[in-house]
Length: 284
Image (cartoon, rainbow, N blue to C red; front, side, top):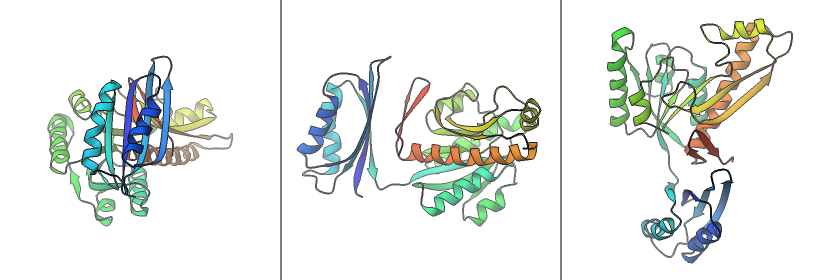
């Protein structure tokens, strides 16, 4: 479909939906989908609007520019994205490959409108997987005193490849504050659900010994506060008494793959709006 996605947030007030719908109708746009949410606690309005522009009476650029008057009258923040599109994405990895494989597979199936520009790793474990998928692999040394230089190199790659989204697919490095701030809202991470209760090298063994009954994974935007950014998606599975630590790892990997794939899909389809430390997510 030739069209637009409009994301908008503004102070809550009467008639917002009617005004947006009227603007679209006035130019013969077709409103394909409108999802909205009102946060009563903060008196904020959020919406995602999908528009078919095939029969617009004006050029798309003029339609986008013309929204300025309405947007400003609503004291809104808004963003348009043209359809169809593919979001330029880089994937960061260390040794574990199940999340990378999931992203590559779903991209190949066409489930997510992304173009993987490269895979970046601080170990070479996933290099063959990337190259077999036809994706360039960058090996970056980040041990010890090389960490800062390594993140500067990643920053350079992101700029050179015009990357819009960075996915941490079990990338086992803590991002520096400046990196998180520079790419705020453009980095997605995945981790198991045992944080912060079970930390360290073997959280699944710790969880097994405590007899946990649920296992899961959290996909979230990255902020300077470790593993505490706005949550996009979560997945859980029930643990049975006969499950071993190895079973818990298997269930955890399943949860991580699913949560990460859904989180990426929500982001690239512009179904998320970050508000303070929460992500408003309009499901598909």
